[in-house]
Length: 95
Image (cartoon, rainbow, N blue to C red; front, side, top):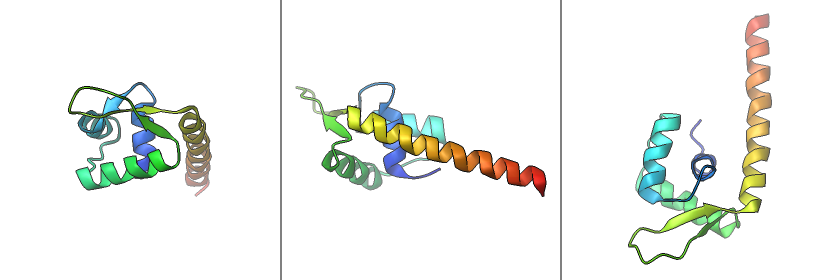
């Protein structure tokens, strides 16, 4: 799986993170290394949709937090993926 927005939402599901921490977390749990342009493009799109928000900080690194809308969207997308995975496994067994 390599949809950057889904990877960012999944990374933030267990707590607030700044960009570099998300990149490292995503690489560990998904095996996908997002480049900075891809990561920050996804962050911008997710902020525009209200799925994540920046948290005020005095640090130079900007942390982000998953919103309630973001959690709901992530759950919906993961449920869809789960159905695809189940269907794929079932079809493999039948072939």
